[in-house]
Image (cartoon, rainbow, N blue to C red; front, top):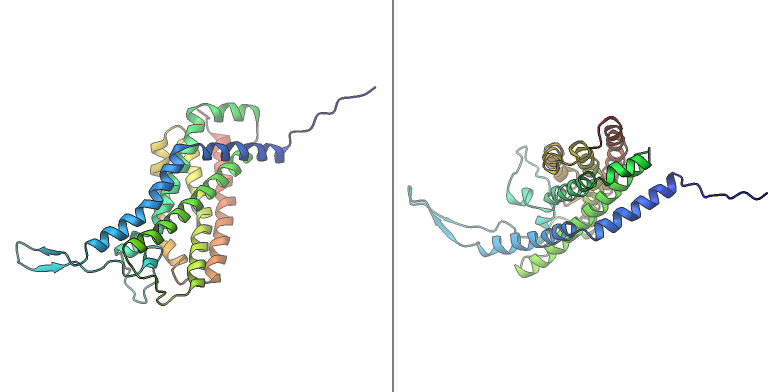
Length: 269
């Protein structure tokens, strides 16, 4: 007597299926392309506008003192990252605050909206009713967050090159080499894996409340934001890449397990 054998829908097949669905959703989500566009335009506007303001005068009506606007960005690479100062004082100028590191928050916006839609539409509840395991959900969303975050950083980098060309800024490598810039970008790309698990755990806490997810994500990531410029400076080396890789793995596994626990212990509505 022949018996019908049905293929077992194991963890690997569930994970692959969910990843395919999530990537298809990401590629058809308008907000993803809007954020990519913003990431591309922001460095162009910053570099062009700050360059146009160079030489303009402002007069203090009380003292009569005249201040001439000096160049903020003298080099294109300054909007990617800065070289750590040797002085003990922390620099908080535009070159350290308005650079590519801002895009980590753009990644938070996308992931919070992306996860929130799962709970608003009822997709998450139906999904977890069928599948008792929530690990594949966390892994899939982590991958989505990492990929989207990387593409956002790349869009900003391309925008910086375009903006530098339009503003006629120097592309000269001062105090750094091409290898340093490559290592810097690799370090920042690997740091995406540090921030994404934080955004994800805040998203599963906030669930349908997108505003809550974003506030929690911004607040938590601000604790690490000041360290990004130190871990991935413009003169980064292979050691910076290794440290960022190790941090990404630890945060993805550690905080990812917390996200899984939150989904198990809290209501899905």
